[in-house]
Amino acid sequence: MAEYINEKAGYLDEKAGAVTVDFAPWRPRTQTYIDGHTLQAVTVEKAWGEYKLNDGNSIPAIAYGTWTLGNGDNAIGQVDQALGTGFDHVDTAQSYGNEEEAGKAIASSGLKREEIFITTKFSGRDNLSIAESIQASLKKLNVKYVDLYLIHHPRLAQPDIKTAWAEMEKIKAAGFAKSIGVSNFGVTELTELLATAKVKPAANQILLHPYVHARQAPTLALCAANGIIVEAYSALLPITQLPGGALDKPLAEISAKLNAKPEQVLLAWVKAKGAVVVTTSSKKDRLESYLAAASLPLSTADVARLDAAGAVGYQSRKLKFALYTLAITGLFGVVNHLGRAFYA
Image 1 (tube, rainbow, N blue to C red):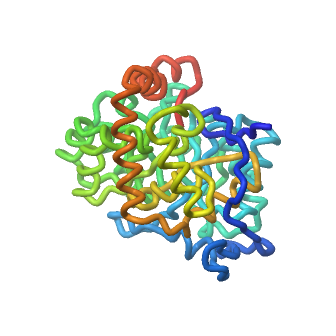
Image 2: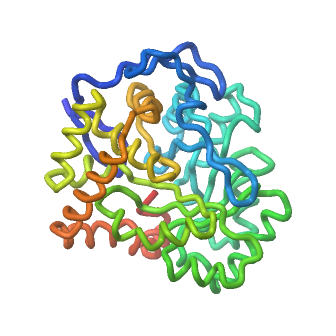
């Protein structure tokens, strides 16, 4: 039976021959597993590691996203499961409606505050200003600060990007967020922000997978030039929503060569791009496989092959991608007005 993996509402069949992962009893930040390729004990912290942000702080290279979780006890349980599996970065947002649930799971995890990296986002909910919204988020999360606070979409930067970013800088200065950044910002918006920013964004969370890599290249280059870490959401879309494209063959062949699952290869591709992975699943074994993906020996040739196939596939499926991209990013204002954001 196909298994739900909670990545933009996608389904994925189980694949045989995946990397075998045997997780030891849970330990904060240093979850140990046996690497299926080297047969050596490796820690999650070592496998995925952290990236240094341009403000001197560090960010774990993989995050558990709460976009699909809804709210209530199920959401609490899912975040608790992710933390118990070895994730130490929780990515949420005001528009997801489950900051409070994430906070409850974090509080009951037994981890110290400094052992968990918390990202949340200003989503323009409840007619609150950026300054008011961070206070609302801190209250729901039951913490004194978040590690990363993002503007969820450039359309939310009101009355303009310059003014909105100045408010974000005040939040960082006040200690309510250790780092500040943006989400879904392209070259135009980033250029406008950087022209007047006193503090550069530490991160830009964007849609990133091989089919959109070529289109996102200018944004990736601008981020790299300014030391802005890219966070990749929906990296598994080529499997969950867009099968049948040019990626299918190379992805299957690389997966077979590495004795890995296709989704692990896609996550390893994101890591090879130097981006933070933001992903999710309701299944513990999938979470374990995501953590194990960091150690896949994806070669430069493998990455280049996926890049090339992604570029071809994007052109041949241009209409579908245009419609899907519009659904994810273009309708934010409408959907947010209705009280729910339609993208991670």
